[in-house]
Length: 130
Image (cartoon, rainbow, N blue to C red):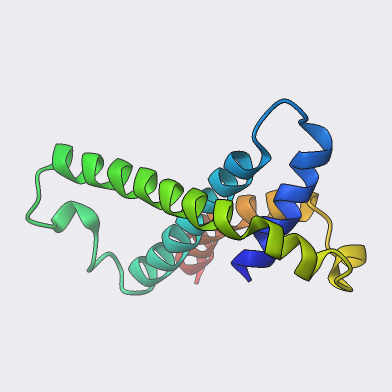
């Protein structure tokens, strides 16, 4: 799944941004989507359990927790960049004529990202109304 998402982002930015590294932009947005997926699942579980696994209740200083999250995000971005820098040519050959290319548009990735961020908050509000 992530390979195809990377390919779609890479091909889009390779056409639009000629002077900028398409690999780094695609890897960065893919990392952002992966972090949003983690946030989505954490928030859904946290809301469903009524806050029993809140991050603020961990025995870690707030500052260290924030630094840890930033370091995790940076390491994830570097990891994705290194992995996809090596295999982006193979992915181009694999997905160039994929049947999903006609139905799946890049703008849908931005809608998915927004949905992953907003859905847990909507879920919380719906649970309050019940």
